[in-house]
Amino acid sequence: MSRIKSYMFSSVEKLDQGLRASGYIADAVTSIVVYLASQLHKPVIVEGPAGSGKTQLAYAVAAAARTTVERLQCYHGINEEKAIGRCGLSSLSIGFCPLFAKLLRRREILFQDH
Image 1 (cartoon, rainbow, N blue to C red):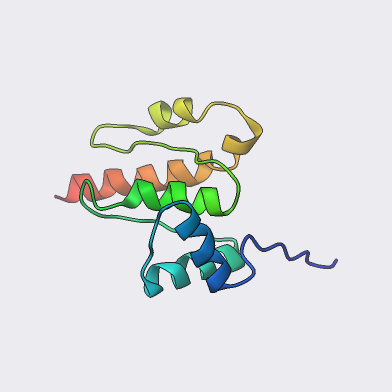
Image 2 (cartoon, rainbow, N blue to C red; image 1 turned 90 degrees about the vertical axis):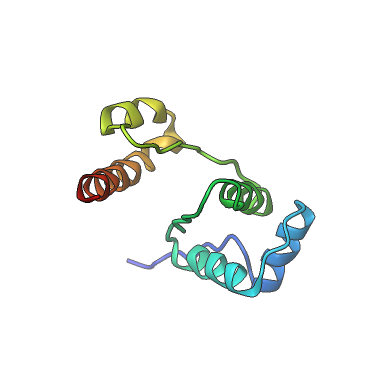
């Protein structure tokens, strides 16, 4: 069975061009991380305080890749049932629901430890 390679961005430079076109100026580390994640078909989990640009990065990457953002707002007290219910049943979101569930279970563990 052959493995089909499909890349969102052909180079870090092309990614940077797409991000700049959407109004986002990324540092070199951010560009490289997003580029490598796209090449490996892996998510980028971004963490930081409110207002640090996490959501804007997601919208800029989506614009550069000519796609949309599936957004789930995580907060203390949200459980898997509430989160999955927010995912809906669209074909795009079904693949993300297991990832969200896994992240939420991890957050619950973190909240319980603190």
